Amino acid sequence: MSTLLTASELVAAYSTGELSPVEATESALNAIEERDGEVNAYCLVDREVALEGAKASETRWREGNPIGWLDGVPTSIKDMFLTAGWPTLRGSTCVDPNQPWDVDSPVAARLRENGLVLLGKTTTPELAWKGVTDSALCGITRNPWDTALTAGGSSGGSAAAVAAGMGELSVGTDGGGSIRIPAAFCGIVGLKPTYGRVPLYPASPFGALSHAGPMARSVDDVALMLDVLALPDHRDPNALPPPISAYREAVRRDVRGLIAAFSPTLGFAEVHPEVASLVRSAVAGLEDAGLRIEETDPGFSDPKDAFDVLWSTGAAQWLNTFPPGSEERIDPGLRRVWEQGKTYSAADYLAANAERAALGILMGEFHTRYDVLITPTVGIPPFEAGYEVPPGSGLSSWPEWTPFTYPFNMTQQPAISVPAGVTEDGRPVGLQIVGPRHSDDLVLAVAKLVEEIRPIRVSRMAAG
Figure 1 (cartoon, helix red, strand yellow):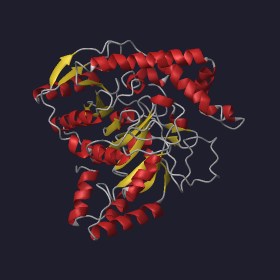
Figure 2 (figure 1 turned 90 degrees about the vertical axis):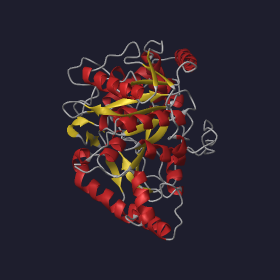
Figure 3 (figure 1 turned 180 degrees about the horizontal axis):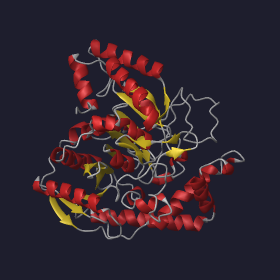
């Protein structure tokens, strides 16, 4: 059972002439044709544009003039990012496709400037509002490991595409776990960088919760992609200055001897026994490899109530701009969030934002003692597709089963999910590494160590 090539391996093959960008792009397009009927990772595929980009890249490689470390790598982009020439419907039937689509978001612009081959756009739940991926516009996105299961969300299309070999790289958004949840469920790597590290335009209505970041089958690829995405853009007033060093080099930093806090539950979360066992085993491996591990909780209680205020008011602000009649057309769950958001006052929002800031200060102090925090990414394995919460769980909303992810959107810290193992019945499990703000390089380096001690590569099992 052969493994899929990573982007780094593809580029190495381009440099020797063993493979060409056209061959790699045709392979990705063929995989989409073969698998996407059952997985439903893409809402738009543009074969002509992809092959045109691949041919241009092939010429650059042949002439010895590639324009970036990922030139010619087949890539997808979540349908939340403006991408010139393609509609950005954001999983909604309420967005009119018949309008000019002539603006690139910073993410799309950086991908083009660095020669990546854009295959198409990946599915999202309506307005990326929940932790699974389904919508009235695009249907249900399924997990390539087992199509009866959810791929997670809201960047589920991106995760499923990467896991199934339908492109080596993708870019997702993460407002409460939307990169890390599907990365864990689909057995790939997904990074939510420090807030502002990847510029956004237009600004997200979810405000300071919203991040964008890379998704791939290896930590090296995520680091390479962050080098591309992390360049500033004048359209985002919150964008950070350019990184002072390359993430592709920082990922190989020696982290042995650093102190990691391991929190199996954050002090309040429930965790499936197999998830707990796999994550603990991976942490033991890190300790054996030289990381100093202390089992401790950060010391905060579940901030879900404050998160709900910030999330629902952002959704309400956005949906209030939608055309009349949209209330009857949007996802019923999103409509509940809209209605919830309308009930909060400015004072409620400011109080929730103050709690968010206090949580950030607490975590900042925590990281004066611990270099990184390690947790499960999601406390449960992937469950049946087509549901917001696991059937029969008694839960009522997606944040109830994602307590490890949304707190770190509130704190704006970098957090990455890397594969920790697979349950006995073949469902992927992720391990999360959280670092202080602006320590994306450190988070990547620890993730690389996890990958080295537990080399769980997505294989043809997921690719079909």
